[in-house]
Length: 126
Image 1: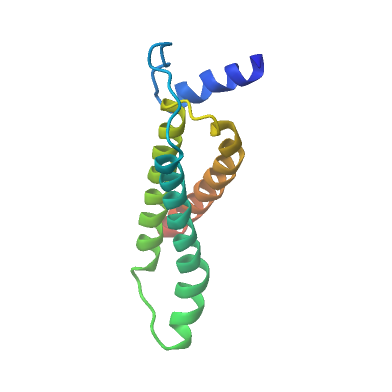
Image 2: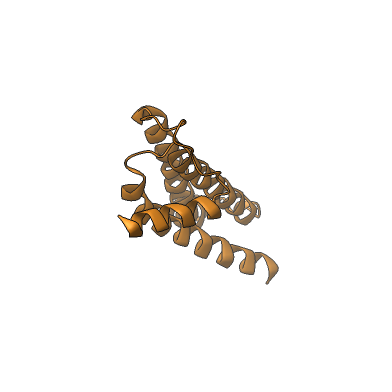
């Protein structure tokens, strides 16, 4: 349990969350947490579908190319990051009992989005 408490404190600092006092602790509802995280995953899925299927493959096949594709993908990357951090902040600020189950998936999605955003920003500058 010491390791989980340490991880809890580290994540709270990263997400700029004030530690919860003993008076504030109550079990949160699962619905808002599931909705927030599900929406951030939906935006990430939409971004991936646009970036890897629709924009580079389907649109050129039907003769449509757009110079606005890269800025749109960057915007979706930033939106996905914002929603991911928002859902993580919700999980940690409410001390949701499943927050540690979510953390590995959230870190993986975060790394994928940051990698994609870095590559897209590099392409935009090149």
